[in-house]
Length: 114
Length: 116
Image: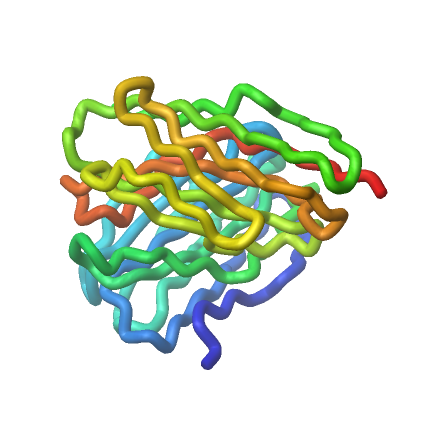
């Protein structure tokens, strides 16, 4: 029972480099999302998806792209990394619909941009 | 827009003390969900509880209890007889049913340190 799997767990990037954070879930959840966690600010929503082929922006989408080609995968792309994107990133998934929306988080990806 | 405030940024207690973590929220929706998550030093987020806005009953799970008061827009979390293993950052979060209850707005978190 893997749940929500994120890779890599740690990454150091140089300013301007690109990379993709991978997220996969094996629970057949419709809803997937990405959050970033910064000190004192809790977690903030970057992008989310309610199903394959459907994505939308959250609170802090600038500098990030997402796609959802399958139900299982929801990668987060940084096209040109900036030091302001140094953060801890969490992927989350859940079923859609009220009453069954317990949200499961991955273990986090620590990203440093130098 | 919704907002969650955890006014206590850090709390330090001695083992076996009771401690209450405060959470105050703002929302225009009449139907919403409230959550608590624990983030231990290892960094993962551990789900503790989900409560919908129609259910104001307090809940107890072992040493944990939650007090939901709609009149004051608060969802406080109490740990009884705290233990060193309770040391973590605790997040309160809100989700409005209008978005199928999946988009979370988090508070800034409360760091709890339990000293032996």
